Image (tube, rainbow over all chains, first blue to last red; front, side, top):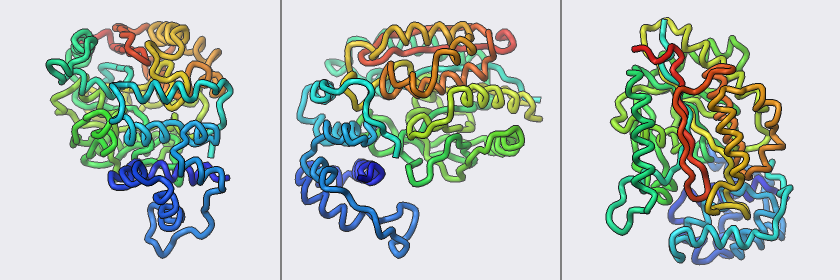
Length: 119
Length: 287
Protein backbone atom coordinates (compact mmCIF):
# COMPACT_ATOMS: atom_id res chain seq x y z
CA UNK A 1 0.00 0.00 0.00
CA UNK A 2 1.22 3.48 -0.77
CA UNK A 3 -0.75 6.32 0.76
CA UNK A 4 2.00 8.58 -0.48
CA UNK A 5 1.35 7.54 -4.08
CA UNK A 6 -2.42 7.93 -3.68
CA UNK A 7 -1.82 11.44 -2.44
CA UNK A 8 0.68 12.10 -5.23
CA UNK A 9 -1.98 11.15 -7.76
CA UNK A 10 -4.58 13.44 -6.17
CA UNK A 11 -2.04 16.27 -5.80
CA UNK A 12 -0.69 16.18 -9.35
CA UNK A 13 -4.07 15.75 -11.02
CA UNK A 14 -5.78 18.47 -8.96
CA UNK A 15 -3.28 21.11 -10.05
CA UNK A 16 -3.51 20.37 -13.78
CA UNK A 17 -6.74 21.44 -15.54
CA UNK A 18 -6.23 18.98 -18.40
CA UNK A 19 -5.64 16.06 -16.06
CA UNK A 20 -8.71 17.00 -14.02
CA UNK A 21 -10.87 16.72 -17.13
CA UNK A 22 -9.22 13.49 -18.30
CA UNK A 23 -9.75 11.93 -14.90
CA UNK A 24 -13.39 13.02 -14.84
CA UNK A 25 -14.14 11.62 -18.29
CA UNK A 26 -12.11 8.41 -18.30
CA UNK A 27 -10.83 7.56 -14.83
CA UNK A 28 -9.52 4.06 -15.53
CA UNK A 29 -7.48 5.09 -18.55
CA UNK A 30 -6.19 8.15 -16.72
CA UNK A 31 -5.05 6.07 -13.75
CA UNK A 32 -3.25 3.65 -16.09
CA UNK A 33 -1.58 6.48 -17.96
CA UNK A 34 -0.66 8.27 -14.74
CA UNK A 35 0.89 5.18 -13.15
CA UNK A 36 2.93 4.59 -16.31
CA UNK A 37 4.17 8.13 -16.77
CA UNK A 38 3.74 10.20 -13.60
CA UNK A 39 4.01 7.90 -10.59
CA UNK A 40 7.78 7.76 -10.53
CA UNK A 41 8.47 11.35 -11.49
CA UNK A 42 10.26 13.10 -8.64
CA UNK A 43 8.50 16.42 -8.65
CA UNK A 44 11.55 18.64 -8.31
CA UNK A 45 13.85 16.64 -10.61
CA UNK A 46 14.31 16.01 -14.30
CA UNK A 47 12.93 12.75 -15.69
CA UNK A 48 16.42 11.24 -15.73
CA UNK A 49 16.38 11.12 -11.94
CA UNK A 50 12.98 9.44 -11.63
CA UNK A 51 12.13 6.85 -8.99
CA UNK A 52 11.84 3.21 -9.98
CA UNK A 53 9.66 1.59 -7.33
CA UNK A 54 6.39 3.46 -6.84
CA UNK A 55 3.18 1.67 -7.83
CA UNK A 56 -0.39 1.30 -6.57
CA UNK A 57 -1.68 -1.92 -5.10
CA UNK A 58 -4.80 -3.38 -6.70
CA UNK A 59 -7.21 -1.94 -4.13
CA UNK A 60 -5.81 1.56 -4.50
CA UNK A 61 -5.80 1.38 -8.29
CA UNK A 62 -9.43 0.24 -8.35
CA UNK A 63 -10.56 2.94 -5.93
CA UNK A 64 -9.04 5.61 -8.13
CA UNK A 65 -10.30 4.01 -11.34
CA UNK A 66 -13.89 4.00 -10.05
CA UNK A 67 -13.90 7.49 -8.48
CA UNK A 68 -14.61 5.74 -5.18
CA UNK A 69 -13.95 8.52 -2.71
CA UNK A 70 -15.35 6.66 0.32
CA UNK A 71 -12.80 3.93 -0.40
CA UNK A 72 -10.01 6.52 -0.71
CA UNK A 73 -11.03 7.89 2.69
CA UNK A 74 -10.91 4.39 4.17
CA UNK A 75 -7.47 3.84 2.63
CA UNK A 76 -6.13 6.91 4.41
CA UNK A 77 -5.76 9.23 1.43
CA UNK A 78 -5.54 12.83 2.58
CA UNK A 79 -9.18 13.96 2.80
CA UNK A 80 -8.43 17.55 1.76
CA UNK A 81 -6.81 16.39 -1.46
CA UNK A 82 -9.63 13.97 -2.23
CA UNK A 83 -12.34 16.53 -1.54
CA UNK A 84 -10.67 19.27 -3.57
CA UNK A 85 -10.20 17.13 -6.65
CA UNK A 86 -13.68 15.61 -6.53
CA UNK A 87 -15.26 19.05 -6.11
CA UNK A 88 -13.35 20.11 -9.22
CA UNK A 89 -14.79 17.20 -11.17
CA UNK A 90 -18.35 16.92 -9.90
CA UNK A 91 -19.53 20.07 -8.13
CA UNK A 92 -20.64 21.37 -11.52
CA UNK A 93 -23.26 18.58 -11.74
CA UNK A 94 -25.05 19.62 -8.53
CA UNK A 95 -26.85 22.57 -6.97
CA UNK A 96 -24.64 24.81 -4.76
CA UNK A 97 -23.08 22.73 -1.95
CA UNK A 98 -25.09 19.73 -3.14
CA UNK A 99 -22.02 17.71 -4.02
CA UNK A 100 -20.34 18.47 -0.69
CA UNK A 101 -23.35 17.28 1.29
CA UNK A 102 -23.71 14.18 -0.91
CA UNK A 103 -20.03 13.50 -0.29
CA UNK A 104 -20.64 13.68 3.47
CA UNK A 105 -23.68 11.40 3.15
CA UNK A 106 -21.69 8.73 1.32
CA UNK A 107 -19.14 8.78 4.14
CA UNK A 108 -21.88 8.63 6.78
CA UNK A 109 -20.95 5.11 7.86
CA UNK A 110 -17.51 6.31 9.00
CA UNK A 111 -17.07 7.02 12.70
CA UNK A 112 -14.15 8.13 14.83
CA UNK A 113 -11.37 7.21 14.88
CA UNK A 114 -10.96 7.89 11.17
CA UNK A 115 -8.23 6.11 9.22
CA UNK A 116 -4.73 7.42 9.83
CA UNK A 117 -3.68 9.81 7.06
CA UNK A 118 0.03 9.84 7.96
CA UNK A 119 2.17 8.76 5.01
CA UNK B 1 13.46 49.21 17.69
CA UNK B 2 10.37 48.00 15.90
CA UNK B 3 7.03 48.26 17.64
CA UNK B 4 4.42 45.50 17.67
CA UNK B 5 1.29 47.56 17.13
CA UNK B 6 -1.37 44.87 16.61
CA UNK B 7 -1.83 41.13 16.87
CA UNK B 8 -4.68 39.80 14.79
CA UNK B 9 -6.08 36.28 14.54
CA UNK B 10 -8.89 35.15 12.33
CA UNK B 11 -10.33 32.39 10.26
CA UNK B 12 -9.60 32.46 6.52
CA UNK B 13 -12.80 31.47 4.82
CA UNK B 14 -12.01 31.32 1.09
CA UNK B 15 -15.64 31.96 0.11
CA UNK B 16 -15.59 35.52 1.49
CA UNK B 17 -14.20 37.08 -1.68
CA UNK B 18 -16.86 35.53 -3.89
CA UNK B 19 -19.70 36.16 -1.41
CA UNK B 20 -18.76 39.77 -0.81
CA UNK B 21 -18.42 40.63 -4.51
CA UNK B 22 -21.51 38.76 -5.71
CA UNK B 23 -24.52 40.77 -6.83
CA UNK B 24 -28.18 40.14 -7.56
CA UNK B 25 -29.39 36.57 -7.29
CA UNK B 26 -25.84 35.33 -6.89
CA UNK B 27 -25.37 37.20 -3.62
CA UNK B 28 -25.91 34.81 -0.70
CA UNK B 29 -28.24 35.92 2.11
CA UNK B 30 -25.44 35.99 4.68
CA UNK B 31 -23.14 38.23 2.60
CA UNK B 32 -24.19 41.66 3.89
CA UNK B 33 -23.76 40.77 7.55
CA UNK B 34 -20.46 39.04 6.79
CA UNK B 35 -19.18 42.16 5.00
CA UNK B 36 -20.29 44.35 7.90
CA UNK B 37 -18.37 42.21 10.37
CA UNK B 38 -15.27 42.05 8.23
CA UNK B 39 -15.22 45.82 7.66
CA UNK B 40 -15.46 46.43 11.41
CA UNK B 41 -12.65 43.94 11.93
CA UNK B 42 -10.59 45.66 9.21
CA UNK B 43 -10.75 48.92 11.14
CA UNK B 44 -8.86 47.29 14.02
CA UNK B 45 -5.84 46.91 11.76
CA UNK B 46 -6.24 50.23 9.99
CA UNK B 47 -6.14 52.21 13.22
CA UNK B 48 -2.89 50.51 14.26
CA UNK B 49 -1.18 52.14 11.23
CA UNK B 50 1.24 49.27 10.53
CA UNK B 51 4.22 49.55 8.19
CA UNK B 52 4.85 45.80 7.88
CA UNK B 53 2.71 42.67 8.21
CA UNK B 54 4.06 39.37 9.53
CA UNK B 55 1.56 36.81 8.29
CA UNK B 56 1.12 33.31 9.66
CA UNK B 57 -0.77 30.75 7.63
CA UNK B 58 -0.67 27.23 6.27
CA UNK B 59 -0.06 26.06 2.75
CA UNK B 60 -2.84 23.71 1.63
CA UNK B 61 -0.69 21.35 -0.45
CA UNK B 62 -0.27 24.05 -3.03
CA UNK B 63 3.49 24.46 -3.06
CA UNK B 64 4.63 22.45 -0.05
CA UNK B 65 4.30 18.71 -0.51
CA UNK B 66 4.96 15.34 1.08
CA UNK B 67 8.31 14.90 -0.68
CA UNK B 68 9.84 17.69 1.40
CA UNK B 69 7.48 19.03 4.03
CA UNK B 70 8.72 21.73 6.41
CA UNK B 71 7.12 22.18 9.83
CA UNK B 72 7.72 25.95 10.00
CA UNK B 73 8.83 27.92 6.96
CA UNK B 74 9.66 31.61 6.49
CA UNK B 75 9.35 33.24 3.09
CA UNK B 76 12.39 35.32 2.17
CA UNK B 77 11.70 36.96 -1.16
CA UNK B 78 11.21 40.49 -2.50
CA UNK B 79 7.84 39.53 -3.96
CA UNK B 80 5.26 36.79 -3.57
CA UNK B 81 2.90 35.67 -6.27
CA UNK B 82 -0.30 34.43 -4.77
CA UNK B 83 -3.21 32.10 -5.19
CA UNK B 84 -3.23 28.96 -7.26
CA UNK B 85 -5.28 27.61 -10.16
CA UNK B 86 -7.44 25.42 -7.93
CA UNK B 87 -8.23 28.40 -5.68
CA UNK B 88 -9.37 30.41 -8.69
CA UNK B 89 -11.40 27.38 -9.75
CA UNK B 90 -13.12 26.71 -6.43
CA UNK B 91 -13.29 30.08 -4.73
CA UNK B 92 -12.91 32.62 -7.53
CA UNK B 93 -9.85 34.07 -5.82
CA UNK B 94 -7.83 36.53 -7.92
CA UNK B 95 -4.16 36.17 -8.76
CA UNK B 96 -2.20 38.61 -6.60
CA UNK B 97 1.32 39.97 -6.15
CA UNK B 98 2.50 40.96 -2.68
CA UNK B 99 5.69 42.75 -1.71
CA UNK B 100 8.10 41.14 0.74
CA UNK B 101 9.90 42.73 3.70
CA UNK B 102 13.03 40.76 2.97
CA UNK B 103 15.25 42.26 5.69
CA UNK B 104 12.75 41.25 8.39
CA UNK B 105 12.55 37.77 6.87
CA UNK B 106 16.34 37.49 7.12
CA UNK B 107 16.24 38.72 10.72
CA UNK B 108 13.51 36.24 11.70
CA UNK B 109 15.45 33.40 10.12
CA UNK B 110 18.82 34.20 11.71
CA UNK B 111 17.48 35.09 15.13
CA UNK B 112 14.83 32.39 15.04
CA UNK B 113 17.45 29.72 14.38
CA UNK B 114 19.52 31.06 17.25
CA UNK B 115 16.43 31.02 19.48
CA UNK B 116 15.99 27.29 18.89
CA UNK B 117 13.63 27.02 15.91
CA UNK B 118 15.12 25.19 12.92
CA UNK B 119 13.13 27.22 10.44
CA UNK B 120 12.95 26.32 6.77
CA UNK B 121 12.99 29.10 4.21
CA UNK B 122 11.99 29.72 0.63
CA UNK B 123 13.28 32.29 -1.85
CA UNK B 124 10.43 31.56 -4.23
CA UNK B 125 7.25 31.08 -2.28
CA UNK B 126 3.86 31.33 -3.88
CA UNK B 127 1.34 31.99 -1.16
CA UNK B 128 -2.20 30.70 -0.92
CA UNK B 129 -5.52 31.67 0.61
CA UNK B 130 -4.45 31.30 4.24
CA UNK B 131 -2.50 34.53 3.73
CA UNK B 132 -4.33 36.15 0.84
CA UNK B 133 -7.73 35.90 2.54
CA UNK B 134 -6.65 38.15 5.43
CA UNK B 135 -5.16 40.56 2.90
CA UNK B 136 -8.51 40.62 1.10
CA UNK B 137 -10.44 41.11 4.35
CA UNK B 138 -8.07 43.31 6.36
CA UNK B 139 -5.94 45.19 3.83
CA UNK B 140 -7.62 44.99 0.44
CA UNK B 141 -5.45 47.78 -0.95
CA UNK B 142 -2.52 45.32 -0.55
CA UNK B 143 -0.06 48.15 0.02
CA UNK B 144 2.10 46.77 2.85
CA UNK B 145 5.15 44.48 2.68
CA UNK B 146 4.82 41.09 4.30
CA UNK B 147 6.84 38.34 5.93
CA UNK B 148 4.98 35.06 5.36
CA UNK B 149 5.40 32.27 7.89
CA UNK B 150 3.90 28.90 7.04
CA UNK B 151 3.13 26.17 9.57
CA UNK B 152 2.36 22.52 8.95
CA UNK B 153 -1.09 21.81 10.36
CA UNK B 154 -1.89 19.42 7.57
CA UNK B 155 0.58 16.60 6.92
CA UNK B 156 1.29 14.28 9.88
CA UNK B 157 3.53 14.07 11.79
CA UNK B 158 2.77 17.58 13.09
CA UNK B 159 4.57 19.61 15.74
CA UNK B 160 2.96 19.52 19.19
CA UNK B 161 0.53 22.34 20.12
CA UNK B 162 2.96 23.78 22.67
CA UNK B 163 5.48 24.26 19.88
CA UNK B 164 3.07 26.58 18.08
CA UNK B 165 2.67 28.64 21.25
CA UNK B 166 6.44 28.77 21.71
CA UNK B 167 6.93 29.92 18.12
CA UNK B 168 4.37 32.66 18.67
CA UNK B 169 6.23 33.90 21.72
CA UNK B 170 9.49 33.83 19.76
CA UNK B 171 8.00 35.72 16.82
CA UNK B 172 6.95 38.47 19.19
CA UNK B 173 10.43 38.66 20.74
CA UNK B 174 12.03 38.80 17.30
CA UNK B 175 9.78 41.60 16.10
CA UNK B 176 10.30 43.65 19.24
CA UNK B 177 14.08 43.25 18.93
CA UNK B 178 14.22 44.06 15.20
CA UNK B 179 16.42 47.17 15.05
CA UNK B 180 14.25 49.10 12.61
CA UNK B 181 11.89 51.91 13.40
CA UNK B 182 8.84 50.20 11.94
CA UNK B 183 5.32 49.50 13.14
CA UNK B 184 4.67 45.78 12.75
CA UNK B 185 1.38 43.90 12.91
CA UNK B 186 1.20 40.11 13.13
CA UNK B 187 -1.77 38.49 11.42
CA UNK B 188 -2.39 34.76 11.71
CA UNK B 189 -5.22 32.62 10.42
CA UNK B 190 -6.48 29.24 11.51
CA UNK B 191 -9.63 27.27 12.11
CA UNK B 192 -12.06 26.47 14.85
CA UNK B 193 -13.77 23.08 14.45
CA UNK B 194 -13.67 22.06 10.82
CA UNK B 195 -14.24 18.91 8.80
CA UNK B 196 -13.12 18.60 5.19
CA UNK B 197 -13.42 15.45 3.14
CA UNK B 198 -15.24 13.58 5.92
CA UNK B 199 -18.78 12.65 6.99
CA UNK B 200 -19.30 15.75 9.15
CA UNK B 201 -18.46 18.31 6.50
CA UNK B 202 -20.63 21.17 5.25
CA UNK B 203 -23.32 20.96 7.88
CA UNK B 204 -25.41 23.95 8.94
CA UNK B 205 -22.75 24.91 11.52
CA UNK B 206 -19.22 23.88 12.30
CA UNK B 207 -18.95 20.20 13.24
CA UNK B 208 -18.47 20.95 16.96
CA UNK B 209 -20.13 24.17 18.21
CA UNK B 210 -19.21 23.28 21.79
CA UNK B 211 -15.51 23.20 20.89
CA UNK B 212 -15.95 26.48 19.01
CA UNK B 213 -17.40 28.23 22.06
CA UNK B 214 -14.62 26.91 24.26
CA UNK B 215 -11.94 27.83 21.74
CA UNK B 216 -13.22 31.38 21.36
CA UNK B 217 -13.13 31.77 25.14
CA UNK B 218 -9.53 30.48 25.34
CA UNK B 219 -8.43 32.93 22.66
CA UNK B 220 -10.44 35.91 23.89
CA UNK B 221 -9.15 35.52 27.45
CA UNK B 222 -5.58 34.56 26.52
CA UNK B 223 -5.93 31.31 28.45
CA UNK B 224 -2.93 29.56 26.94
CA UNK B 225 -2.39 27.17 29.83
CA UNK B 226 -6.05 26.13 29.94
CA UNK B 227 -5.98 25.57 26.21
CA UNK B 228 -2.75 23.56 26.32
CA UNK B 229 -4.18 21.44 29.14
CA UNK B 230 -7.04 20.26 26.92
CA UNK B 231 -5.68 20.33 23.38
CA UNK B 232 -3.46 17.57 22.03
CA UNK B 233 -2.68 16.33 18.54
CA UNK B 234 -5.03 13.41 19.21
CA UNK B 235 -7.85 15.48 20.72
CA UNK B 236 -7.94 17.83 17.74
CA UNK B 237 -9.37 15.03 15.59
CA UNK B 238 -12.53 14.99 17.69
CA UNK B 239 -14.04 18.39 16.73
CA UNK B 240 -13.42 17.72 13.02
CA UNK B 241 -10.68 16.23 10.90
CA UNK B 242 -9.27 19.62 9.80
CA UNK B 243 -9.30 21.20 13.27
CA UNK B 244 -5.52 21.03 13.62
CA UNK B 245 -5.54 24.46 11.99
CA UNK B 246 -6.56 25.63 15.46
CA UNK B 247 -2.87 25.40 16.36
CA UNK B 248 -2.29 28.53 14.28
CA UNK B 249 -4.70 30.29 16.64
CA UNK B 250 -2.60 28.91 19.51
CA UNK B 251 0.48 30.39 17.84
CA UNK B 252 -1.26 33.76 17.79
CA UNK B 253 -2.14 33.38 21.48
CA UNK B 254 1.60 32.98 22.01
CA UNK B 255 2.24 36.23 20.14
CA UNK B 256 -0.41 38.03 22.20
CA UNK B 257 0.78 36.67 25.56
CA UNK B 258 -0.51 34.56 28.46
CA UNK B 259 -3.56 36.01 30.13
CA UNK B 260 -3.77 38.85 27.64
CA UNK B 261 -7.43 39.48 26.86
CA UNK B 262 -8.22 40.32 23.26
CA UNK B 263 -9.25 43.93 22.72
CA UNK B 264 -11.67 42.96 19.97
CA UNK B 265 -13.65 39.73 19.60
CA UNK B 266 -16.32 38.87 17.07
CA UNK B 267 -17.72 35.67 15.63
CA UNK B 268 -20.12 34.73 12.85
CA UNK B 269 -21.77 31.33 12.54
CA UNK B 270 -21.73 30.43 8.88
CA UNK B 271 -22.62 27.16 7.23
CA UNK B 272 -20.02 24.48 8.06
CA UNK B 273 -17.74 26.73 10.15
CA UNK B 274 -17.72 29.52 12.68
CA UNK B 275 -15.88 32.64 11.64
CA UNK B 276 -13.85 34.23 14.44
CA UNK B 277 -12.00 37.55 14.63
CA UNK B 278 -9.63 38.74 17.36
CA UNK B 279 -7.38 41.77 17.78
CA UNK B 280 -4.93 42.67 20.53
CA UNK B 281 -3.13 46.00 20.92
CA UNK B 282 0.08 45.19 22.82
CA UNK B 283 0.59 48.80 23.86
CA UNK B 284 -3.01 49.59 24.60
CA UNK B 285 -3.76 50.79 21.11
CA UNK B 286 -1.97 54.10 21.48
CA UNK B 287 -0.90 55.63 18.21
